[in-house]
Structure formats: structure tokens, C-alpha cells
Image 1 (tube, one colour):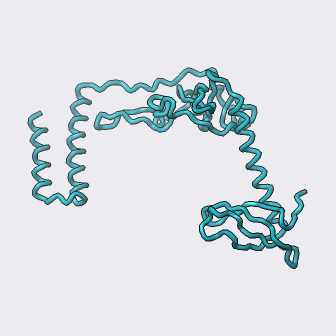
Image 2 (spheres, rainbow, N blue to C red; image 1 turned 60 degrees about the vertical axis):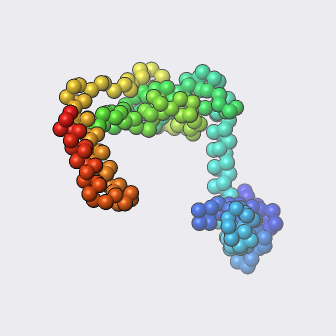
Image 3 (cartoon, rainbow, N blue to C red; image 1 turned 60 degrees about the horizontal axis):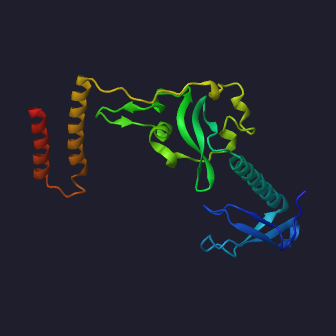
Length: 235
């Protein structure tokens, strides 16, 4: 059981967007305590006193110990990895990111190499009307991320982790799944023609939307749009 000691017991509490440290400075009547903020990082709040009940202080200490334990568990997991080891990050709903362990700046991290599982179509690469290829977040990390995409996720989100969520038990085993093909087919002749038109429309839209910011007079804007239309007619 946590014992509150005046002058020694410290805990954190939410202040605006901060989480400063408070120290118990004296016991007040009615079983409450005064605690004073010691955190200099909170501009204008250091030295401010608050009143807490014993249960409030103990609950805040327990909360901090819980998160400290979770952080320690996560750090231990990543410290015991091996370069080249293959792991799977679970994004939920049987969506997995396969990755390989790499060592970057002295830290083991998971570098995405493939998507496996039941990813939805909107999570996969697709071609936009103007011909550009759009890569959603995780697909982009696999295709274009390289070492910059490597990261340390929560150990509870890693399929191979002993602390993984029990909700994965009835789902897919990502280790047995084939990678999803993330390539986007090339465009047909008709699609190339349509994408060229879309790009011209985007040029016109850019002129109209940015005209006020660039202080472009209406006449000059219309001339610029007219030139784009002429390019279309000549194509």
C-alpha cells in the first residue's frame, strides 16, 4: 500500500497540456494534503499549490507506476531483438505489416517489408484520375519508406510478442500469409488520355484557387487558363 510522506511523496497530475511533478508539502485538516508543482517546464505553474485527498494522490501514483511498467516492458522487448528477425505488427482487423529487424543508431527497429492479411482496398496503392499513384500510410512505408520507415511499436501490437493482445488468438497467423502485391497496373491508352485531361483541369483549378493569394489580376488569370485550353485543343 502506498504511504504518503510529507516532503517525500511525489506524483504527476494534468495541468492544461502538461503533466508536471507535484510534491506533497503538508497535511491539511480532513485527511487532505497540499502538494506543490516543482516542474519548471510548465511556464508560470512552478510553485503553485493544489489540494488533494489521500485517494487522489494514491490513484495518481498507481497510474504512473502502471505506465512506467508498460514502458519498461516495451523497452525490454526491443532491446532483445536480433538483426534480420521477421516480426508482424498488427494494425487491427487481421491487417498486418511484416517487417525485418534492423539496427539504426544503436536501436533495434522494425523496417516494413510487406503487407499481409485482410487489408481493405482503400489501404492499398491506387491510381488517381490524374495518373499519379497514391500510396496509403502503411503501403507507402513498405514501398517508399526504406530505413526511415523503421520504428518501434508497442510490443503488445507485435504478433510474435509474448505480451501480444489476446484478441489475436482467433485471428489469422501472419507468419503463414503471402505478401500482398502492392504494384499498380500501368494505364491503358484511354486512361492516359483521361489523365492528361485531368492534369490540365488541375492546372486551371490551381490558377483559380491561388489567384487571390498571388494577387493575379482577372485578365491575366483568364489568359493563363486560355493557354491551357489551347494546349488541350492542340493535343
